[in-house]
Length: 50
Image (cartoon, rainbow, N blue to C red):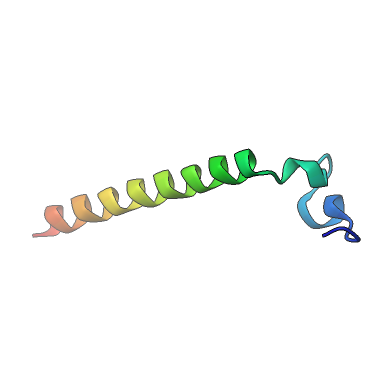
């Protein structure tokens, strides 16, 4: 990533230093929460169909 244009890959205003362990952790937390919410929604839909 050292020689790549980060803004071209991820959008305007994004810098290489934005990719640190804290940012990665927040992103993973968001993905986990979205997946959890999606799983719960799926269970509710299946229960409703039964």
